[in-house]
Length: 271
Length: 255
Image 1 (cartoon, rainbow over the protein chains, first blue to last red):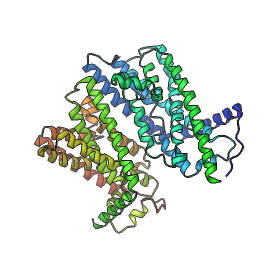
Image 2: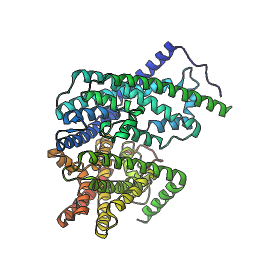
Image 3: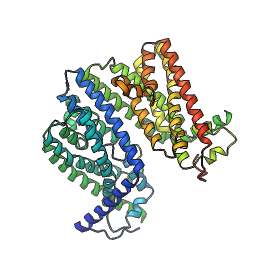
Image 4: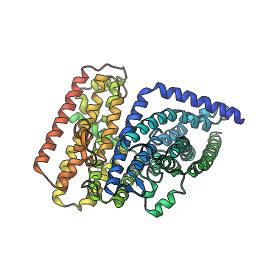
């Protein structure tokens, strides 16, 4: 098997990525059933968790780990809106595509499969993010109260988009293991739970025992839920965006490298 | 019943055929469940108790939830697919068999990953209760009722597809009942709490069983059994009524 000569021009890659993303966005909007389920599920999860944390804050003198009841509602509405739009079993799905040689076919295109895949996934989740974030904004305002800080909320907007992109890149990086082990089943379960706890999706990292909280700050998972949620809960901390950008470079490069090595392995195995 | 039993045995054999995959999936599910235990331990460490719930009661709730969830989604896994089978007109194979299509559909497949929930739930209950006789007996009875309730609700949601033609509502109902059942319903108040004892019976699936196991009340117990029976009756009736409206999609391989 030989792959077509890859397109290496940055402009060309950007153009293909943008086109792939555009098609995915259009497809997501046309499949309204999926959007409906995603939005409904988001509202349910957000309602439960914010009620839980609100009740906890009220029972603890109005705050938990420095977060007021209002801040906790905004935190949860944001952390959920950047995680629920993502396909739950993305790692598993990519692993299946690697195992059944769908990726091998994609390698015949003159563009790296990782570019098309990341762009497509990003296109799929952006409309869902827009919907969940809008619902979350209304929900948090009604249930928790007005935003604590306007500037922090403004910073949260790009942070949410970055969080999704980071998550997609990280999942591709993990799923690339399937090039060698041919089976990424179940890995998504563990990954998902890492985002749940060490990523701060279910609870602010400040709530964790201090040793665990310290470790989580050095892991990339905190950029996928905690960073935008912390900003939306009224903390003006622009350095969180810089941390996200830094991890984006690392994870995007890691995913590119892992797929590149994996594809070479695939070609080597087939020849 | 015999046909259903044989179908179930084959489904079980199929699930057990790849032992390594079975163990891996079960372990992964157990790790997943342990994360929830970790979450609740951290939560109650920080907030103490909440509206009468402490970490022990929530762990008991998790035990009931994972055990009944493991039974329904593990042993009767196909109940999740009924809605999509109806929407796609994929029930033909089940309807052509000389047996009750509902019992065939329910026992048609076993999901190894959810068997991990079952093992975890029982293990967690043993840890929480230390196997005291009365709580153990109540746990067994409550889990049976809770499983019937969950199964009935999922069947009802799937059967609604016969009438509305689409399965998105069923999918949402599935997520809703599992999600709300994983939390103590007492954290909610007002209309929301009423909904969780009616439209989405999450309160009956976990909160009521926990109350019964923790502090048995015969009246509540009778009410629980009555609600379970009512849900099962409505679900079965809805499926059979809906079946009259079924339109074939000429798909013979899925059911």
